[in-house]
Image (cartoon, rainbow, N blue to C red; front, side, top):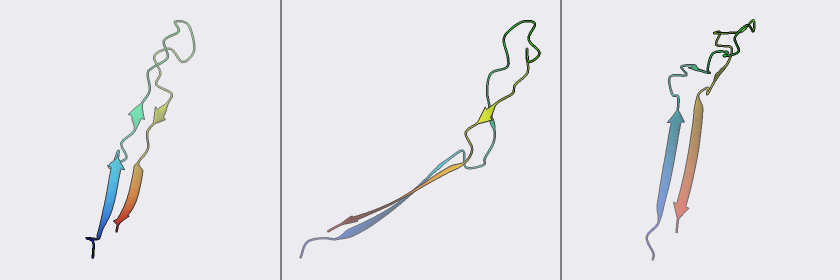
Length: 53
């Protein structure tokens, strides 16, 4: 028979869940000037399974 295999893959992005802050407000005179008001990029886990037969 032919060779068979099973592959398991786990990928982690931002595994420690640190916030990735956006850029501060840049409009002079606006109430949010110089204030960072966004954060993105929470933890992402991707799982994969591949069977070869």
